[in-house]
Image (cartoon, rainbow, N blue to C red; front, side, top):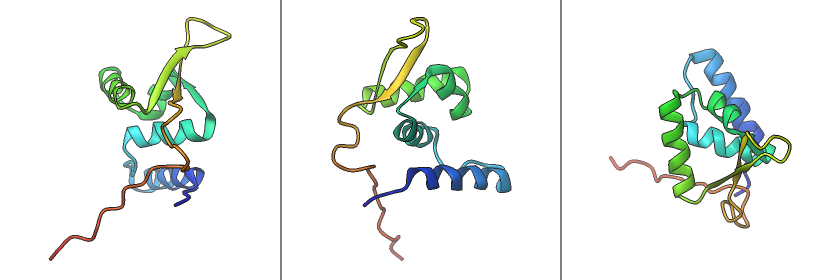
Length: 105
């Protein structure tokens, strides 16, 4: 299934503006943005996530430990760490999608 990541991010932005809450989890926002931009600095990802410092690093560790992301030093500024999608993150597909079956009842 091909998903247009840019549309998902735009829908999330509009939903947030209209309702005041995010429709996407911080992990999804980071992964979708990495899919479109290629990489983010840690600071950019932290701002994007909207999480506290501690909450962000918990999410970052979860994504790294699950094999979704890698981190490396920025080529232009070695003080900056960049977050990238791991090579195998999406395989041959543009995005992994788990569709839940309808609730019984």
